[in-house]
Image (cartoon, rainbow, N blue to C red; front, side, top):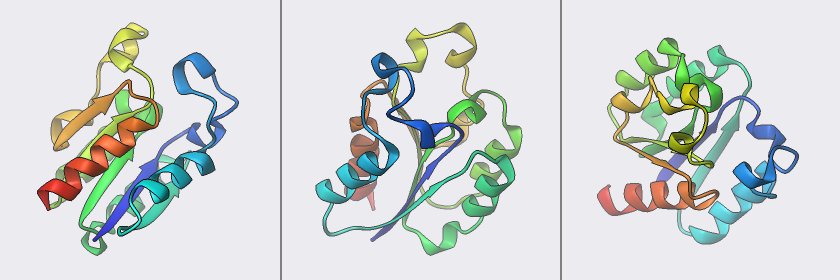
Length: 139
């Protein structure tokens, strides 16, 4: 099984951002947590602050069994990423480290979640673990 994990803008700054919302772990720590939790799964980790690069990576979906995506701020307005996800024929799970529904009003709307298999938010690094668990159990 091979899973693609995509992280969007500013997630490369984990560990420096608001620790109450995002925890104290870095993106490398997060990737390590995932690898330690799922030793029998092959992962491809990708992070970009650029919308087009994320779209290009999504378009490689045929190499994977499932996708975990944290679109970051693109969640709220990127119809281009939404359209890319909509074309994908495998499960895509949207995850968020913070509880987006209990934050600022603009963060409560996701344009990408309606074309994903599901959305998990608010469980810090465990949002990723829960999303991957879903993929493992349903593939």
